[in-house]
Amino acid sequence: MRASSFFGVTLFAATALAHGNITSPPARQPGPVMQQVCGAAAVSAILADGTGPLENIPSSGAADCNIFLCKGAQFEDNQNNVQVFAPGEVVDFAAQLPIPHEGPCNVSIIDTATNTVVGQPLLVFDSYADENLAQLPLNNTAFSVTMPTDLGAQCQTPGDCTMQWFWFGTAAVQTYENCVDFVMSE
Ligand SMILES: *[C@@H]1O[C@H](CO)[C@@H](O)[C@H](O)[C@H]1NC(C)=O
Ligand SMILES: *[C@@H]1O[C@H](CO)[C@@H](O)[C@H](O)[C@H]1NC(C)=O
Ligand SMILES: *[C@@H]1O[C@H](CO)[C@@H](O)[C@H](O)[C@H]1NC(C)=O
Picture 1 (cartoon, rainbow, N blue to C red):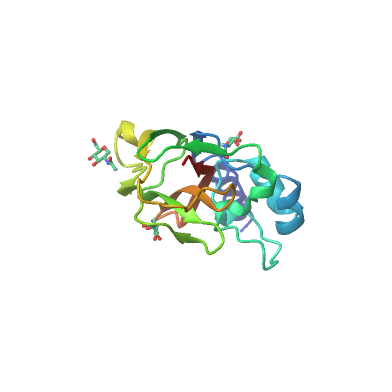
Picture 2 (spheres, rainbow, N blue to C red):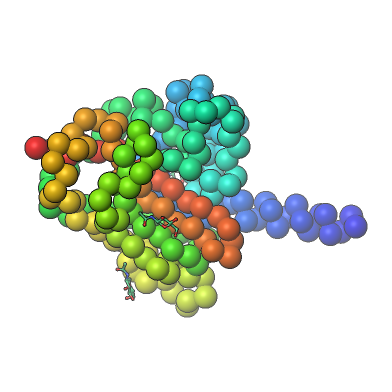
C-alpha cells in the first residue's frame, strides 16, 4: 500500500512538470484580476507550470471564472499585450511541447463575450503531439495561421476577440490552451 501510494505521488510529480504551451506570439498571462475572479490557487497553478493542463488549475467556482476560456486568464490583466493583425496576414506561432500527448489541436478566433468560435477554425490538426512518433512533425512547434479577410467590424475592439490555441491529449484526458489577444487593423 505504502509503496503504491509512493509511486502514485512520484508519477503525479513527474507528469505535472511540463506539457506544452505557445511561446510566440505573446499569450495571455495570469494577473491580479484573474486572482480576484478565479482565486489565488488558480494563478499559483499557472505560475508553477505555465505548460500544465487546464485540469490542474483549480477554479474558484465563481460564475465569471471559466478555466476553459484562456486558462481563466483575464483580458484586464493583458491590456498592454494586444497584437494588431491585418486581414490576410500570416501569423507565425511557436510552441514548446516538452511532454507530448496525442490528440486534436486547433487555433481559432474566439468571441470572448460568448466563448464561441468566430468563423471557421484557422488551423486544425486531427492528430497533434503524438508521443508515439520518433520525432514530432516540425509543424507541431512552428505553424502559422492566415487571418480572415471577412471579419467586417468584428475584432476591432481590444478584448472582444482572442486567438486560442487549443490542444486535447486524448489518452491523457488533458486540455491545453493559450490565448493571443489581438485586434484587426482596419
Ligand atoms: C509557458 O510555460 C513556461 C514554463 O512554465 C512559462 O514560463 C511561460 O510563461 C508559459 N508561457 C505562456 C504563454 O503561458
Ligand atoms: C478544437 O478541438 C477540440 C478538441 O477536438 C474541439 O472540442 C473543438 O470543438 C475544436 N474547435 C474548433 C473550433 O474546431
Ligand atoms: C503537419 O505535418 C505533417 C507531417 O508533414 C502533415 O502530415 C500534416 O498534414 C501537417 N498538419 C498541418 C495542420 O499542417
